Image 1 (cartoon, rainbow, N blue to C red):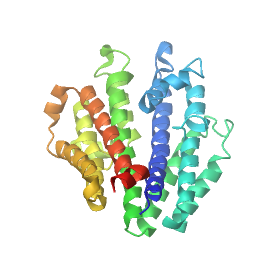
Image 2: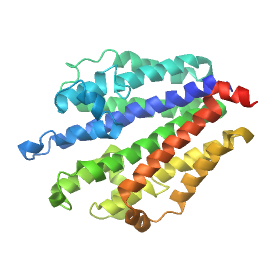
Image 3: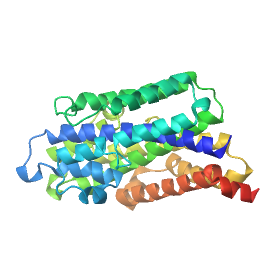
Image 4: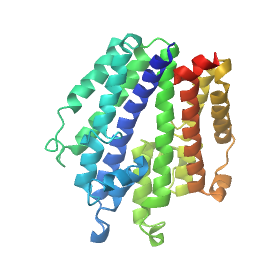
Length: 319
């Protein structure tokens, strides 16, 4: 497969997943903002989406205050924010158009239809009484795209690169959500174990569709150690780091040749660490430190995937 085609398929999937993840974060943030609280903390939750996506600094350069109106506009409608839902839908469509012959007509119809609808967005249509419905629509379109992909696409290299992009993006997002909750969200140490802490950990679970799974697995009150275990080490939790790296490692085993073994080695190391990891050791090391290191490893793996499969000039020179 041409490296340009592989790159388009990979990033098409990443942008679809990123749009869904952004909708999940904003949906939970909006719901949390409705919980009664001290007036001084009224906009506290709205820092979380910016911290998770690493866009607090560029946001601050354009908006004077972090609040619901500004964050919603920036994270949903702003074409200059590469993490906004608008930008993700546009980028996914552009990548899909570039590989129109490598995807099925059903996949193209979903992505193109999503982009056409997103173009009709306006601040009036994002009014508070309709914003939750919009976030549900974004998630449904992402689910539809993945379902159509699995149901219609030939299991060739194109399929594997598409899936690789999905799970690379998902692992990065899950780690960011956990890290921000643990390191940033809690207003003060006095709230640890209190109602605010409980609702925030419940929000983390809901943001990755894991609230019901947590209840089924642990049948207990929400505890940070168990939430972290569910979203890091459990291989049967679809959005956990372990489950994502299982998929990434398996896909790389199928597509890596002799010249791409470094990407496979990096993925294998991350997979083994999660497969044999223990939660008590991880917490003793420090959850923030662990997640920061994991994100660095994901970035390193993404760079190696780019070098091995998408950097055309480098591969030709090596040959």
